[in-house]
Amino acid sequence: MDEELHERIRKIVLAIPPGSVASYGDVAELARAPSPRLVGRVLSEDGADLPWHRVLRVDGTPAHHLAHRQLELLRAEGVLADGEKVNMRRYRWDAVEVHEDPGLFG
Image (cartoon, rainbow, N blue to C red; front, side, top):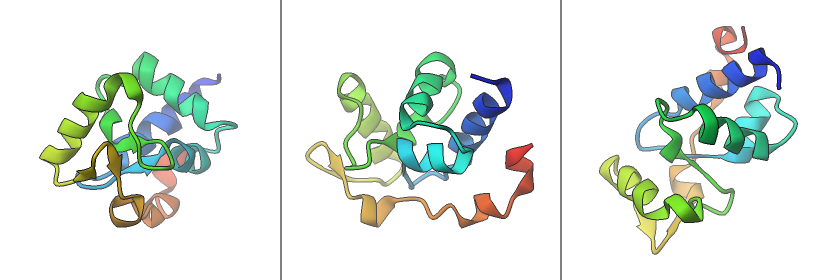
């Protein structure tokens, strides 16, 4: 993966505001990444300093191995889950401001 794409993914995840979530696909689309899986890879390898917990599967479920911690962090920001699923219609980030910020794309 090229360094520019890696940094775009990191900047977009960093831009997700508290109380909001995005899907891996949302981040991939905004970053012009070829796959949502690439977003997951960046977060797993280089996302400890990012609000990684704000990125969920498109159906609102967290990564299975991180579910408890991820939902706990989201709850602290006011994002409530129904069981282990976040209502994406209610909490999904409207990323319009990202499209208008050329600084996110180099």
